[in-house]
Length: 200
Image (cartoon, rainbow, N blue to C red):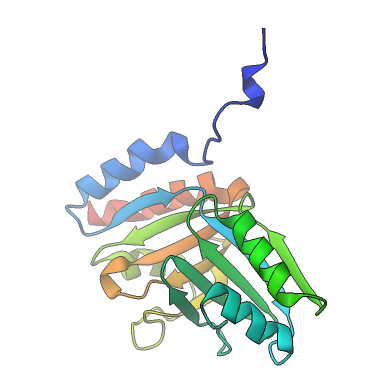
């Protein structure tokens, strides 16, 4: 008999917590909305922001890589996060990572560029609702006021003592993405659920 374990569909690191996240959302009456966004494509890109590869890659992707620190650029379903002067994280729909990698490598040609699929490294939690900022503020040292960390901002920071990439989505009602390493996702989910009890 064939070993089906090798052909089983992938399982997200928070599949076991989906019911608890949904229950917390219902119990809060919409004050907070918690959910996992599993399997988003995540591709780390490093290149010279002033070199010819940057323009070629931007053209191939259909979006300009953000040059201002801690900002986000979005075009269609593709989001680019500034992580450093020569480093970005591209986030796209599930299953698009190989296409993104190929487009970047082809566009860069012989120019020096590093492209790494890190999709399996992290999962993404959605934290939304009118009290989303208050919930995140329980465990994040950043000033999350909309004037400081409004739509289109991102940061590498700690949330509940866990390293994350925090993204303020491009509409205030869209809430936040919390990109967290898969090995810490369960802990961070428990932390968020515990902190959310204030709004239940």
